[in-house]
Image 1 (cartoon, rainbow, N blue to C red):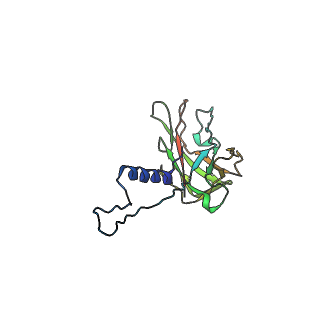
Image 2 (tube, rainbow, N blue to C red):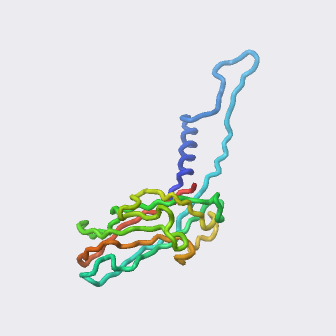
Image 3 (cartoon, one colour):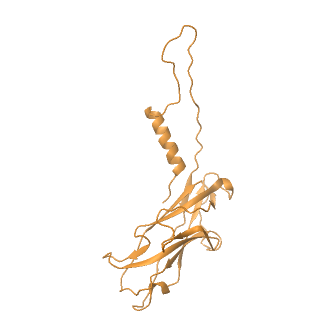
Length: 196
């Protein structure tokens, strides 16, 4: 999932302008004997577009009824971002936010048992600043303070390098220490990238 905050605000302003709610043009209200003067603004919007791609589902397997869920190895999903201008420069940066449907818990179908986990946004194999969600760290919807560079330009080829040390990835660590009954436990994570 991706959101265009800047683009959305521009669209709102344009819609308001078309409905008459926002209007900078001035037309004189009364006729004059010598001249009549009015003004209007000219605005050019060059909105940044952004595209999130490359995400993959993360699946864990355990066959032990007595082992703690945290004993499984961490899982990863790559992710990549394209922006309008492209290229890895300060003009093409974005911020990232993660949100969890179950407050960073894997839950069974009965919604009774929970297995906590954390998410860490990795950049080239290293955690980004303010890059951990869940486990008492960042809450759902929090935007990291680290600015990340776009991978490619909008309109290019959207191939996300799956190498965890080259591009960015999201690391999933199951942290639950209490064994759980056999079953399926899941959650849905929403990833939001916003151009800055």
